[in-house]
Every structure is written in structure tokens, then in C-alpha cells.
Length: 95
Image (cartoon, rainbow, N blue to C red; front, side, top):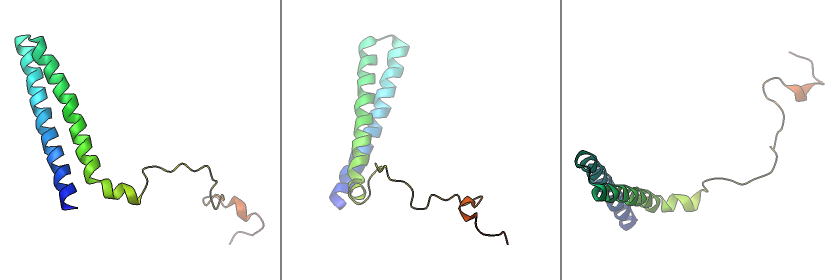
């Protein structure tokens, strides 16, 4: 558990550092009109975003095994009655 936590934390920190570097390179590319630095900055930003998401996925790995992200169920509700207006209680008098 500690190993996966450190791996995820390292991935996130490396990703955040990559985001800072990539945006700094983009800033420099706009100031000096250097296309190669701008392309390198854009690719660095994309790679850093991938690393941040990968680090997050790595730390939440144990949580994903216990609960699914979404449920694909086409079943109807257990109690389809409307709890606000009481339409299913038509045979009872109001209190």
C-alpha cells in the first residue's frame, strides 16, 4: 500500500512539475516567437497531464476494486411510488 501511494504521489508531483515546465516553455515561445519551443511545451503539457491522471489512477487502485465507477442497470426502481404526492395511496383517506 505504501509503495503504491509513493508511486502515485511521485507521478503526480512529476506531472505537476511537467505542467509548470510546459507552460513556461509556451510562455517563452510566445515571447520570442520560437515554434520549436512552443511545440515542445505543448507536448510536455500533454505528457504531464497523462502523468497526473496516471498517478491518480495508481493511488485510487484499491478503491476501484471495491466500488465501480458507474452502474449499468436497466432495472426499474424497487418502489416506483411517488413519495411527494402519494398517488399510490388512493384507497386511503387523508389524515
